[in-house]
Length: 188
Ligand code: HEC
Ligand code: HEC
Ligand code: HEC
Ligand code: HEC
Ligand code: HEC
Image 1: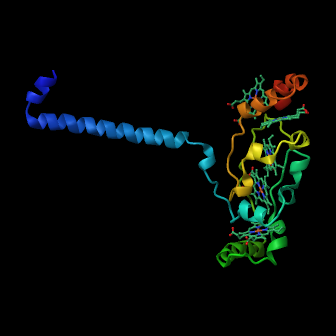
Image 2 (image 1 turned 135 degrees about the vertical axis):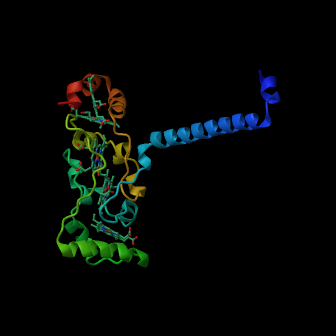
Image 3 (image 1 turned 180 degrees about the vertical axis):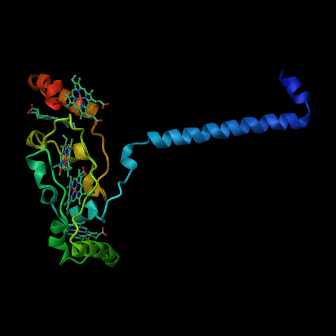
């Protein structure tokens, strides 16, 4: 079979080799695309309406709760209004002069009077029941569920699916586990 192939006219061999190469190329492209769409969602940055970097604010000593006060006691941690940003930014000049251009964007929007609508990253479906309070009361750190936000620019998607919730609930003390893995604990 192979011998007859190579005894065939050279053009036919080249055509076959070319065809095989094309197929391999297509397979590689498909594989690359597959890896790309399967890659952790944490890679994706949402398109947010204004510049903001967690890292610079946390480094400057601003506490998570100053901007997300609801995280202590409710399901809604809250995202800061432009008024809250301006509370600091009417007066603060950034260390890096290049950053002033970003602050000018805030000031410009502030002058139009339009509110800011941050794109929400951690949005649970309506049938999921969640509250920050019991978690913080038990000392679960923000990073456990949200990743190391303090080193991020914009917040990024992190693994908040049912398996992630259940893994930790199953690891709680025996007398609590039954309740913590009950469907009705997390679902309406
Ligand atoms: C046990 C996991 C867990 C921990 C710990 C946790 N969060 Fe959350 N957080 C969530 C989930 C789940 C949502 C989505 C809630 C929803 O959409 O109903 C959320 C939503 C948010 C939001 C989105 C805004 C909003 O109002 O919903 C912010 C901001 C936030 N968390 C900040 C924090 C901060 C700050 C901490 C630490 C003090 C923290 N979270 C700790 C799971 C957690
Ligand atoms: C408690 C005060 C405070 C609040 C509130 C605050 N910032 Fe800042 N912000 C700072 C400080 C301090 C810096 C300078 C950090 C530096 O220069 O390293 C800064 C820097 C910045 C910069 C320039 C750095 C960059 O990434 O280009 C932008 C943009 C910015 N803040 C946006 C915001 C937005 C948007 C909000 C509201 C969601 C906000 N800030 C709320 C204190 C604050
Ligand atoms: C100066 C205000 C400020 C501080 C301080 C701050 N954040 Fe944020 N946070 C924001 C803004 C503005 C957004 C919306 C833009 C974005 O997603 O990054 C946000 C978004 C988030 C989100 C994603 C919420 C969602 O579902 O869209 C999480 C989680 C979060 N912050 C956690 C934290 C944690 C943890 C800390 C402390 C380590 C912290 N933040 C400190 C202003 C702040
Ligand atoms: C890292 C561990 C951890 C993760 C992750 C976690 N939880 Fe929890 N959860 C706890 C602990 C600890 C408690 C408090 C148990 C207690 O009352 O002592 C709790 C309590 C709860 C409660 C209240 C239960 C009750 O009846 O008092 C709900 C609802 C809940 N979690 C939902 C969720 C959801 C939804 C997720 C995923 C988005 C999640 N949890 C992720 C550890 C976790
Ligand atoms: C600790 C909290 C928790 C418990 C307990 C829990 N779930 Fe969930 N469940 C979730 C979260 C969070 C989601 C949303 C996941 C997402 O957005 O990826 C979810 C999603 C689902 C979905 C939708 C799946 C999908 O792909 O959209 C179904 C169905 C479901 N849960 C059924 C159950 C059943 C049945 C039980 C009891 C055996 C249960 N869950 C117990 C947290 C929980």
